Amino acid sequence: MNTQQTATRLTSEKITAEDVRYADLAWRGANKRFVGKPDYIRLVGSTEQVIDAVQEAVDDHLRVVARSGGHCLEGFVADPAVKVVIDTSLMTNVYYDAAMNAIAVEAGVTVGEMYRKLFLGWGVTVPAGISPDIGVGGHIVGGAFGYLNRQLGLAADYLYAVEVVFVDASGSAQSVIATREASDPNRELWWGHTGGGGGNFGIVTRYWFRSTEAKGSDPTELLPKAPDSALRFKATWDWEAIGEAGFKRLLRHYGEWCEANSGADSPNAKLYSTIFFPRKSPGKIELTGVITAGDDSERLLKAHLAAINEGVGATYTLESDQTTWLKFALYPFPDLVDKGSVGGIFKLKDAFLRKRLTDKQIDVVYHYLSSSDYMVGGGFGMTTYGGKTNTIAPDVTASAQRESIITLSCSTGWAKPEDEVPSLKWVREFYRDLFGETGGAPVPNEYSNGALINHPDVDLADPVWNTSGVPWSTIYYKGNYPRLQAVKARWDPLNIFHHALSIEAE
Ligand SMILES: Cc1cc2nc3c(=O)[nH]c(=O)nc-3n(C[C@H](O)[C@H](O)[C@H](O)COP(=O)(O)OP(=O)(O)OC[C@H]3O[C@@H](n4cnc5c(N)ncnc54)[C@H](O)[C@@H]3O)c2cc1C
Image 1 (spheres, rainbow, N blue to C red):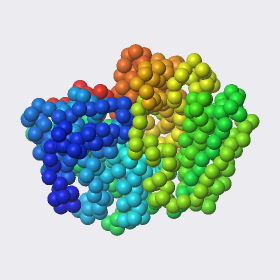
Image 2: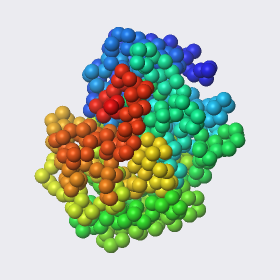
Image 3: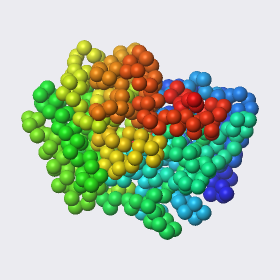
Image 4: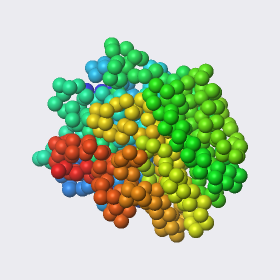
C-alpha cells in the first residue's frame, strides 16, 4: 500500500542532542518564541515508521507530538514538556492514487510544493494557505484558507480522505484511512480533519484530495483548474500623510468593501487582499493582494482601490505585475516568504468578522497603533474572506466559521528579550479592547465570528484575557465542538496527542 512513500530512503533514526542535525531540527519552528528540548526527534519516511515511532514513545511513556512544516503560532511542538518529536518533513510525495481516485499529498509536503506539483502534474490546485513554507500536515486539518478561498473555498472542502496513525484504548499504535464516503465507518475521523486542528487525534501521514463534484478518473478533472493568471499588487500609504481621519476612513471603507463584495457570485470573489497597518513609527500602511480574474483583473483592482481610498485625502503608491499562478504561489510577496522561512519571535491574535469593524472598534485600532504610550512594534491586519467559503454549511466540515467576510489579526514581534513583556501586554490589551463589548474575545454573534484554529491563541483559554464567559472551544469550533469531542474520544481515548488548546473528550 505504501509503495509510493519515502521509506526506502530513510531509516527513521533517533536524532539526539549529540547528532549534528539536532540543533537544526529542534529549532525548526517559524515562531522562535518557543524553544523545545525533546529527548529525540525522529525523521520518518512511511506510515509504518510513524506507527513504530509512536508505539515506542507510548511504551516509554514519553510525550510525543507531530511536526510537519513547523508553522505553529503557539508552543504546541516546541514545548519543554514534549519528549519526542515525530517530524514528517521528509514525506514529500504528491501523486495520483488510482485506487482512491484522488490526489495524494504526504504530510511533509509544504504548501508551495503542493501548489507546484498539483500545477505541473495536472494543471490543478487546492485553495490552501498563503505562505509556501507551511507544512500540509498541520495545516489542512485546521481548515486552511488562503488566496483562493473566496473563489474556491477552503482546502479542507476538497479533502477526500486522510491516513492517520492513532493509539487505541489498549495503547497500540496503528494506522487507519478515513474517507468522506457516507458508508465509511471511519467517516467521523475524516470530518475531524476538516477543521479540528493539528495535534488532536493522531499523526496524519497522507491526505487525498478530490472535489465533491468531480466525475470520472482523469486526474486533471478531480480538482479545480489553477487560475490562468495572477495580478499581484501592493499599494502603500504614508502614515504621516494620511492623518487620523484618513486612517479611520481607510479602515471603514475596507470593511464596507468586504460587506458589499463577499458573495460567492461576486466578480470580486477572485480578489484577495490584506490591508496591514503597522504601528505608526516604523512603517507604511500596505494593501497587498492578488486577483485571478484574467482580463477583468485590472478593472477590479482599480475599483477596489477607489472604494477603499475614497475621501481618505492621501494618495497611495501602487506597484502591480501580471504573473502566472505558479510563480505567484511560490513567491507571493518577498516579505511574507522571508518571514515565513526564516521565522521570528512573535504573537498573533486573530478573529473572524461578519460585519465591518464598528466605529468604536476603529477608534481602538487607531489608539493602539498611533499612541506614543507604547514603545513596541506590531500592527493590525484585515484580510478578505467569504465568497465560496460561505456557501458550505457550518457542519459539513469541522470548519464552522462560514459566514465571515474578514479575518483580522493583531500582532507584535520583538528581537530583544526585554521587549517581550511590553510587546505581549500591548497586543493582549489591544485585542481585549477591540472586543471590549464581548469580554475581550470575538464571540460568535452578529458582528464577530470566533477565531481560526490554524491561528491558535492560548489567551482565549485564559480567564484573565477572555472574560466573555464563552469558552475557547466555542470560539474556535462553534456548534461543532461536541462532535469533535466525540471524534477525540473514539480515536485518541488515552489523550496521547494533546496541547494547550487540544480538543477534550467529554
Ligand atoms: C507565516 C505563516 C503563515 C500562515 N498562513 C496561513 C494561511 O494562509 N492560512 C491558514 O489557514 N493558516 C496559516 N498559517 C497557520 C498554519 O496553517 C498553522 O500554523 C498550521 O498548523 C501549520 O502547520 P505546520 O505543519 O506547518 O506546523 P507544525 O508546527 O509542524 O504543526 C502545527 C500543529 O499541527 C500539528 N501537526 C503537525 N503535523 C501534523 C501531522 N502530520 N498530523 C497531525 N498533526 C500535525 C502539530 O503537532 C501542531 O499542533 C500560517 C502560519 C505562519 C507561521
